[in-house]
Length: 108
Image (cartoon, rainbow, N blue to C red; front, side, top):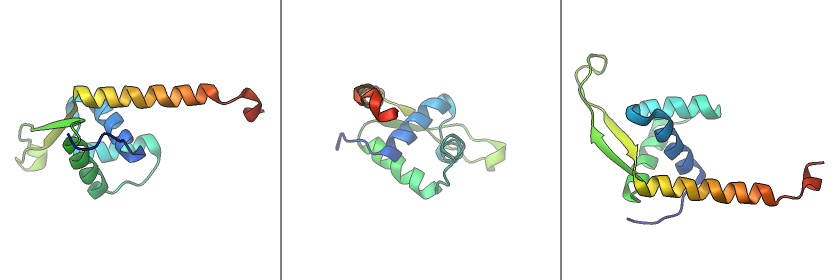
């Protein structure tokens, strides 16, 4: 496993893989990211992030079945690994802890 840090876009990609669960593939991930964030996302950015996250051990992938809508081509599906779930939980806990540490007066 190379590197353990997680950038914002990588975190969003991991969360999206979790959201899509059994149907997390490149284009579907891009579409869901755009829906969830309101951002325009390039498919190449998604693919690069997926490769990085798989290299880091946070995702695994496998080839799904061929579909008629894809002209009989298979699609690469992604799933969170145990390490991916752990890094997401650590990120969530850190963010929650920091949000909870901001004094209320800041928001007044």
